[in-house]
Amino acid sequence: MSLSTTIIWIALPFFAGFLIYLLPQLDRALALVGALASIAYAMLILTGYNTLGQLSTEPLTLRLLDHFGVTLVIDELSGYFILTNALVTLAVVVYCWNSGRTAFFYAQMLMMHGSVNAAFACADFISLYVALEVSGIAAFLLIAHPRTDRSIWVGLRYLFISNTAMLFYLIGAVLVYKATLSFSFAGLGAAPPEAFALIFMGLLVKGGVFVSGLWLPLTHSEAETPVSAMLSGVVVKAGVYPLLRCALMVESVDPVVRIFGVATTLLGVFYAVFEKDTKRTLALSTISQLGWVLAAPAVGGFYALAHGLGKAAMFLAAGTLPSRDFKELQQQPINSGLWIVFVMAGLSISGLPLLAGFGAKMSTLEHLLPFQTIAMNLAAVGTAIVYAKFIALPHEKQGNLNSGFLGAVAVLIAGLLIANLGYLQAYTLANIVKAVAIIGAGWLVYFLLARRTAFRLPRMLEQFEHLVGMMSVMAILLFWMVLA
Image (tube, rainbow, N blue to C red):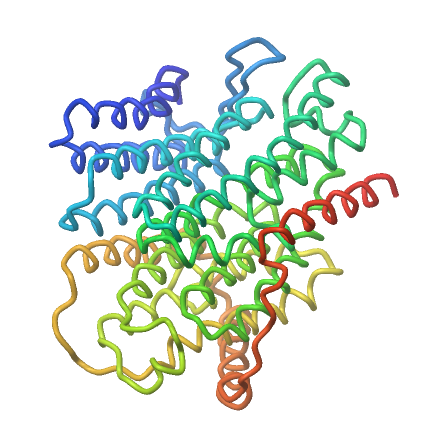
């Protein structure tokens, strides 16, 4: 992969986004081109070929402004994240094709797509800061796009929490530079402990990890359906990706990332099991699945791909349901086409063979450290319980579904089936039996216990003032961890 190819690929979505304002009649076509270009670039990375058609398995490292400036790393990890962004964006473009969305919507979608792509290529703290801030502004504009009082408030809430967290992150990045004369991720190992704590606090909030991610359920559930799909499928992973990259580059970071992975997985799945609202259940499950991505950094990229495709499909289907209340949905059959989407995507995230989620989940479980094993296996059962709520919904053949929806979920489900071929080594008899046993245990618990419970968890910690307090708690926890 050459420098010029990489720069063109990073710049293309921004150029196309600005061009939409000059040629608004081409808004959908330009958004489609941006997504397809990212798919092509990601496939070049993952198939291991450079721009000359030669096989290359070495990661590409680009230093654009000497050793202290912008550093880009392109390898298999970034390839999986970039492919996730590309496929989810493509699906959303197809979903919105005949919806009458404005040129402004498509332009901001491309801005968000491009900035998230840039975050997935960054290996230094300053360029990552710029990419995350641009993605945050674009996400805010998409959340607030309906221009209702509710959407504007949810967008501003997201923007304030995000920007406050990134302020602490920026201070940490400056401390890394002061200690190492470089903004590279690798400098985190030689930086003072307070730099580590501040940077991680910012990234945990941005990525929706552990209690720092309790802003996520309201934001993702209240956004419009295609925006929810992009937020949960891709955008939060821009905050998780650098945590994985740092864990792989700095040995001392790995155990901290794994600890937060386990804690996040358990917290998210516990909330999701008891949630009665469909979109909030999916949003809370996103927190849990981000923990799975962090639990085993070496294979986190493939898990991010499997989750991103499945979760985007689930959000698109949930946005078509006649109600968001599970109790109401259990009393009225849903469209069988929607039910099939829930089954395919839900079983993939649960880890059923023949879908990408199986290889992702089994490879993650195989790369766990001993202290993670029991907790993550329990979380796997919890995930099966969460998605049993969707799979168990009554259904019947009804009217035809929107063509845009069908095209979008076709892209995502096809991605889950094809990506399954990337981890064929996971198909051992022991893994297949384990996956079926986990899903079976989850369904058994759901039908015998969870389905009948009326218990609701309080949402007090999701309130705006408490979200700010959670950042303080996370800062204290991180400082204690690094100083201890």
